[in-house]
Image (cartoon, rainbow, N blue to C red; front, side):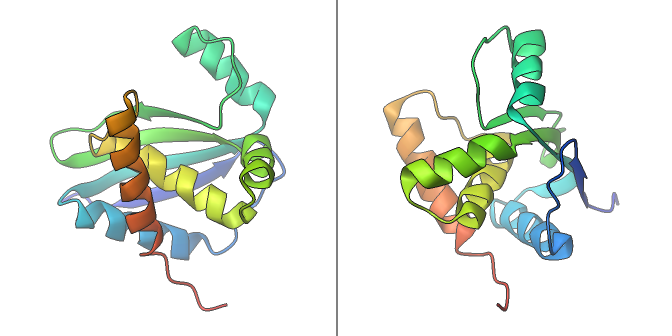
Length: 143
């Protein structure tokens, strides 16, 4: 049996505090979708870093908050999730939400893609948003 592994890396000066809490939350969220957690890597970066990935691998010349590369095998989720901390900060301000809330939403968004959820149509976007809200409520940290 493969031991689940959620890893956090940073290509910028951002440091995710309480990594263990985030890792446990991701594993619990995956389990709640009747999936298994394989190796999921989060790579925190800046706009330029993510823009270069967007150009190189997706041929998109746009800024984005997240790009995920899904390497899921069967029901065991594997993949790399790149997140622009600059986009998260800007979007949090634009949406009037706390930085950590926006970060959690984007982090779980990538995992939900690995679970098979899409966000291309309005209907898919609504379901994705409901799932994000559901999973965010699973995150419990004593303040």
